[in-house]
Amino acid sequence: MFLKNLFKKKKLKFTAYTYFEYSERMYPIKMAKKQLPELFSATPLYNTNVTSNCPYTKLTKINRLDNKTIRHCDGILDLWANSMVVVAPFDLVINIKDNKVEYTTTYPSALQVVQHDPAQYNKMFPNYVNLKFLSSWRMFSNKNVNCMFTPAFYHMDENIREDIIIAPGAINYKLGPDININMFVKKQFLQKVIHIKAGTPLVYITPMTTEPFELETKLVSKENWESRHSGFFSFKSNYKQHKIEEHNENK
Image (cartoon, rainbow, N blue to C red; front, side):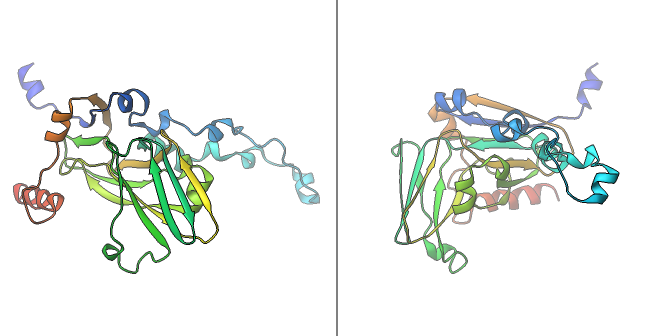
């Protein structure tokens, strides 16, 4: 039995930590398949109202298999089956007017939104303003697995998809814990107000592996949560420094 356990393959696991009780209770990180969009669930499996004036269609009948709705899409269902979904940790109201972007949050002293200086992205996004959710969650993985960090496109409200770009990327949660969400808000002259409510799905985290994985969320003390940060021990990027160390260990 000892030898069997000794050589038993360790299962891939992601553990998310927060020190905010309400985040763990109300807005935990979940598998996307457990948080389906309401409009998706309300969509019938088949479009039974398909009609046609085409004589060919009338003669051959409309094949029921051709009437499948979005609820049959394997690409979406497989994405949700293999992705975690991160929601907005608090309300954020964005006011766009005269090509300027203002914002306010419900809890600015503890849960913050910050901005990157436009010089950081130079001229790549001239018509957008950067905002960044500093998440109340931190994630750790027990294995060296890269994860895709992409917009929760199918879960988003239409006004978010129209006026906000959530920046995609890749991250390895064995090397760095942060789940901060970068957004680019589109400038416009006429006023528009966007209300991102707490609990609004924003990001999919998809491990780039076919290996099954577990997800666990934990409520910890603030001191414990802060101690799990990578720390500022280098003038180089902390995440990049961890990648270098991991690479050297695996040589």
